[in-house]
Image (tube, rainbow, N blue to C red; front, side, top):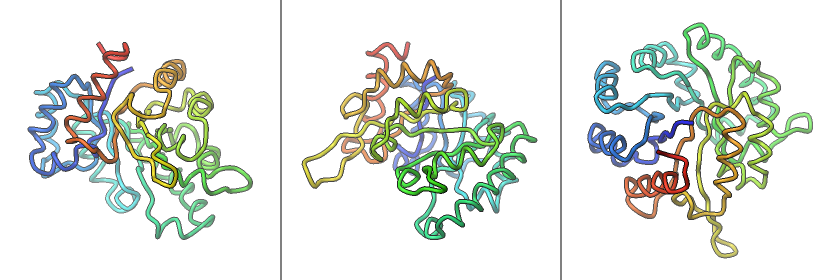
Length: 255
């Protein structure tokens, strides 16, 4: 499995200096990046920079709005930089207010978007949070209803382990359940605070997830990319992602 970084983690740094941030990410030993926006770089500029740094652009988080309204632009950009996975990363409160009707319509949209991307040699995936396990359709979690409704060749799984555990579900069980349909896995460690406090994201190995067991399960499930992501960092984000990859290296998950 390759080790990637979701660039949302270092969004403040990329906003100031995209090139310099990617240079540091490459120097840390990350093998690839998952975009959360492209700064002001053209696709050709981004491709050349990634080639220079030896980084693989394996995927990008693309909002549902852009998937609906700017899909051609995304396809052109991602094909130029060599990315394969196009991931719907989040849904807004306004969208979720639509209830079951919204979800059923979304599943139909994913079939269409997934087919278009497949024709272009790209792959659609969906990244979960906790709300997919807080709502049900026909007695099953929305998370599972989605993957039952959309053809497995048109929609792949990007499980965020931290959010699965936060939602009270077993991340090991979900890795096993979607083995073979799960090319992308977000490694996000959470730590529970004092009673009444929210939990927060922390560097790998400093939270409550059984990461070594989860990574072992991911290998059996044919995961392609282990992706470090930290929503909020108490330390400078670049220091946090360095700590995380050093943990992976110390635990035998990175050369």
